[in-house]
Length: 409
Image 1 (cartoon, rainbow, N blue to C red):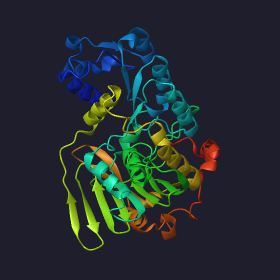
Image 2: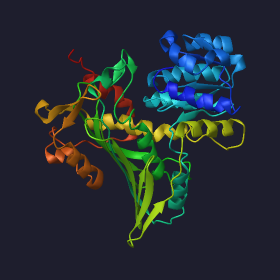
Image 3: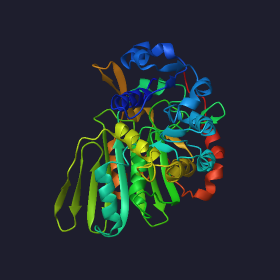
């Protein structure tokens, strides 16, 4: 019930008020922690059963269910997905489905045996302007697609990485977690970037031929809070990502789609525009859009045979999961940004510390726009990254284990 699960409860309550769905049951390891929320969601009046674990919930209630929503920590997704499919349920699985490429293939295989394909909750794929622009790209209106860029800088306090046992971790025990700015906070936007590069249909993502990446950290974490990654697709598109949580200023994220005759600038929740090579500027009309509610509605349309497919299937997530994995294989290390380059910015209103890195904005901008690697600017590693291919995926855990070192208290 905590975290993003609360947003799902809000969305389902909205659906229930419109008589489109009914919440039968829910679970949380510590349900008594959320008594106020249960009251606000009117669980008693709605007749919602509350459990402390999903196994007990499914044993008691599966025969009364059509759909299971899974907004749990990522490393628990596969086992809950398995239990739901075995119980004959459709599954709305929060993003990302998993960060283990081998586990993803097992989930895809399991999903093929289900009556209905699972939805993975990458929320922005169904935005109407995005769908229209993707069709225009495929129709060749803007000329050849050359490059997709994502430049995203978000501020997160140092306490953010202490919010739960898996935050900023590569492993929890023997379980692969691979939590990073790419796999977690910017996962939606990275999946969006890959969506632009899919050429088979509007609902398509590319196959990756190779990935190069440099991984850095400024926070005291095991994984990376700053990533520069460049993927090459088999259809000849370059996808470049400049991402960081080592930032104390305003949050920003922007997707840029570079075509032969025009450049599309797309910012989720704000707007989009097309800069034509001729000098013409075309602005895209933007309407209020509740992504989570609309994703629930879209999946319900699929479950009732009003739509041909979910917005993002497990198979559609291959490119994202492979990109994330190969970023770690390519980088080979997570370079710690030297303490003299890092400063703490105290937010007196929030009473929280934020990390700021000297020169980071310029380095990330150079990479996003021009592909100039941070290491080429002498930025905290001796050599540029190696190019990693999907054939190297079996080396993922081998490359990660030496990086999984104990952190200072």
